[in-house]
Length: 100
Image 1 (cartoon, one colour):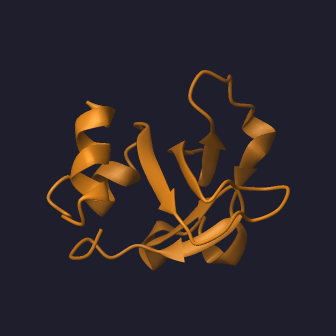
Image 2 (cartoon, one colour; image 1 turned 30 degrees about the vertical axis):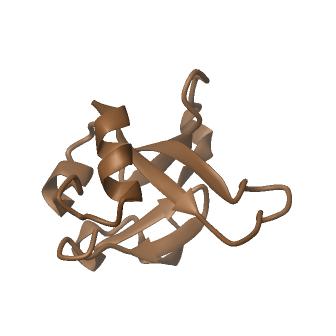
């Protein structure tokens, strides 16, 4: 489950990291942030968000909240899955399976 995956990833291991194919399959997955500081009005320094690739874009939501399709992002060429880019609430990152 998510708790196990979170603990594995927080320990620095990538053994619980999903494959790119898993991430674009339409299933939800968890993105964990462990930043030195909050991003004001956007993200707490230590938080976990749920992400799902749907309708050629990335839908980000907090556990326990209902997502809205208009919260979907495709910025930074993240809508094209051949770029291996994910947009988490508009924050774009390139995903490398080897490092998670």
